[in-house]
Length: 142
View (cartoon, rainbow, N blue to C red):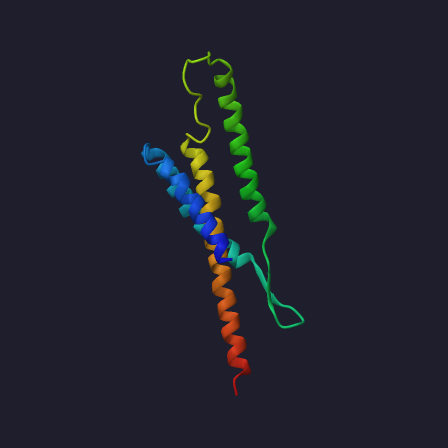
C-alpha cells in the first residue's frame, strides 16, 4: 500500500513539474488534488471494513467512486484528443511541434482528482489497518 502511495505521489510530482512553466496548469492540478482528497475521505466513509473468518482485516471499496473517477479521466482525455487531433492534421512538415495533449488546466484537474483521491484513500486504509492490528494486539495481551 505504501508503494501505491509513493507511485501516485511520484506521478503527481512529475505532472506538476510540467505546470511550473504555466501556473494555470499547476492550479488545475492542485485544485484537483484537493477535491480528490475530499472525495477520498468520502470513499473511506463508504468503504465496508470487515473481518474475514481467519481473523484478518479486509475491506470492500465503493465501486462507484473509483469507476466515476476513471470514467471522468478517460472521457477528458478522449475529448482532449478529439480537440488536438485536427490541429495535428493541419501541421505542415517542419511547421512546429504539435500542441501537448496535457496542456489544459481541466485535464490536469482530472489527473489531480485521481491522484488526490487514491493517495488519501490508500493512506486511510493504512491508518485503518494499523488501528486494527493494535486492537488485535490489545485483545491478545493478558
